[in-house]
Length: 319
Ligand code: 13P
Ligand code: SF4
Image (cartoon, rainbow, N blue to C red; front, side, top):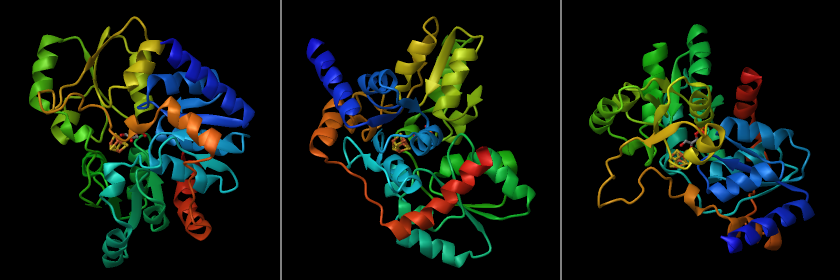
């Protein structure tokens, strides 16, 4: 433990020496979340991370999360240096939406507004009219539907299907999924609910439809955190990456948190409800990127400029 504390203090000193700020997601290692908050950075959902990085005066951002989060930060602030603890930290949604295939799909449907989830590459964003995150996707698609627009949605099919149902919008869905949320199981969740009849069920909308149907609250990571802080229940069943519980425990210490069941709650998978790419972020990576300048995100400037339009449109919408 003392070695960890030493490395954390070392990382904090490096952030200070480099005038850098740490922008972390709720799914990363608890030490990194604490370090971010103790050094003036943030722990947030993907929308808030993008906004925080853009608005912070610091010229070096260390983004602890997955690659699309670092890319979005760089696209929004091309003049800043954006570092990541591990550049190989990707996302199954990003991997499942290759830019060329996506562009070909869009070409066949030129009459549709192209709405892409934040969890995509810069090249996919460059092809989009709108970027959305889980915290604002519903409101933005509703807005487009009210304008009479038809939509192409990519890449998460569960989130897209949920929004389609809620809004009644005409949406063509890309067939992508998050390997973490796709593992939550409705039958087992129903059994768990029966054991905890007063528990409030919180579900991230990247989960399968049958799981989302059992939710009391459906929302982004920040919205799930608010639900625990403000909810009247004493027990909460949480269907998202289990590292969010680190922050939930800190901000709602009296509440009982229960992990939602996954298909992998068996011998085949020790910790299915934790993203393997988020898990690549650690104190050592933060230290290495600041000490050695490794892990820098580069986005080709013309591509970045093109991709920035759909992010700005979302940020203006939610402002
Ligand atoms: P949030 O925008 O809700 O933080 O989600 C990001 C993500 O990758 C969820 O798996
Ligand atoms: Fe991507 Fe899922 Fe990991 Fe989030 S949890 S970064 S959506 S693979």
